[in-house]
Amino acid sequence: MPTTPAAFLIDDDRLAHSCAGDVLTLDGPEGRHAAKVARISAGEEVLLGDVAGRQARALVVDADKETLDCELLLDPLPPLTRTPRLALVQGLATGGRDEQAIESATELGVDRITPWIAQRSVSVWRGEKLRKGHAKWESTVRAAVKQCRRRGVPTVDQPVNSAALVDDVRARTASGGLVLVLHEQESTTLMARAEQLRKTAADCPEITVIVGPEGGVSETEIADLHQAGARSVLLGREVLRSSTAGPAALSVLCALVGRWD
Image (tube, rainbow, N blue to C red; front, side):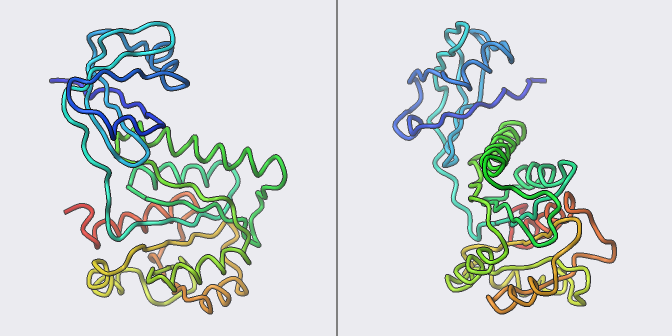
């Protein structure tokens, strides 16, 4: 049984201007990883993709210590566009639970991720930690993209505090987006909105799920988010961890809006 080729990302737009038979050089960090760590050699197939979602199988025709020359076997698939887009606002959490959440969300097809420094976040990014935290989330997302061989790399927004998130939510809803806050004290479940979500999916540009940190979303934050146009929903009877709640909700949404048809 043939093995699935290893996936690598090209950070420029060369795939947009390429077709079957063209040879692209995989260099930089991706090329070094492919050659030194993955030990890809001439004669092997790889899967090349870019941020926009173009993707093509390629045959390695030459390899050295830090680069691979790859001949495209087929024309690249075009950029991937899906409506509605799925977005996750993930509250910062300790123990790597926030990174687990965005890794799983990426594998499930999330299109946009926003780090949230919530009022009850124990982990808080400031100064250099903010830059490093954002870079680590981007790295986690890219690794997950390659692992699951999905098309397109989710956008990782700059971190926001609660006040900035409220402004962001107001902008998302004003543009026709739907924003859902997972809240354990809500009585209306996500599945209770299933029919509404199916009907609005075609005309809704983006559905956003907001997940708080370990301590949950404060009453002040809930009130402010509601005022900005967000709606709170209950995911289920069990109270899920911050690492699990977002991916679980995204799984439901993927099914409801036709991602898994």
